[in-house]
Image 1 (cartoon, rainbow, N blue to C red):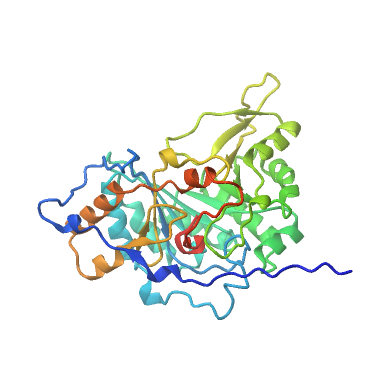
Image 2: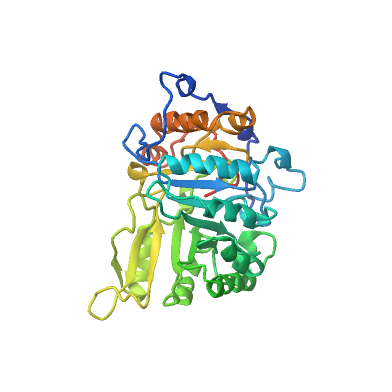
Length: 386
């Protein structure tokens, strides 16, 4: 008897058109905020990290992000005129940096699909933190265009790159990207990034139980001792189209235990406050971290909430400010820019929005029963970046 599978029904609700109202206090002379680099939200969390999505398009159709049955040939992407221009992005980035942002990550979609992305990188590389230091300027990519772009990205001022790679087995990888893209081309892109001097390369592997957990150990063996940091990410309930189920989540604790049984690990201290990844180094014969062999990381956004020190904001492709990866709505900053708002108005708006931030989605989710609904219709990750 042929097994029958119930088709997945995905409600199509376009979250891009809705937004929260901007705080009126931002534009009152009496309550207008200036920037001093010390901005904090309602839980005392500073603003240090800005993720900027530069396109909502991607040439992959990974089922945990942009499943093909939703993002098909008829899907309506944002028109070019709706996207923030490079000058608008840089102007907003300058405001965020004045409020304390030290790191900017360019995301998508696939950011290397944005035409002339190097020009934006050149502009952002000129910004300085409130301490007068260069920004930590990085980019996340699926690696498909990295081989041909790595040198120009480095020349434009990009410092680091993170590559999404969910397995080394070509059949598994082609199945997960769902466009039959070969894994060899992504590996070539990683090598090109290393040759170009894009240091501290990281690789993100989303682990989906029943799909690619058999790729964990081969990935570790491939990148151990290469200077590349491999990070394993729990399959997340982002957006409304990926059909997320808790039984497809492989907890990070299991990932670490699996690797430790073959290649002993020792836990390392966080690199920075608010870091999402828990760090594990390869141990030597004495149980100490062998730095020549490097480290791995695990991002446990489902089983271990890290909302308490989250210092990240996200700017969507069309200029909406999101305060959480799992948010349902953002704040429309593009409307301010195109209404010819002053820099003081933009600075005050961002300040008031962040000061009112209460987001702690992962903490609330972890308090629910495993089969309970978390409610709300969250924005798609392809729209605001990971």
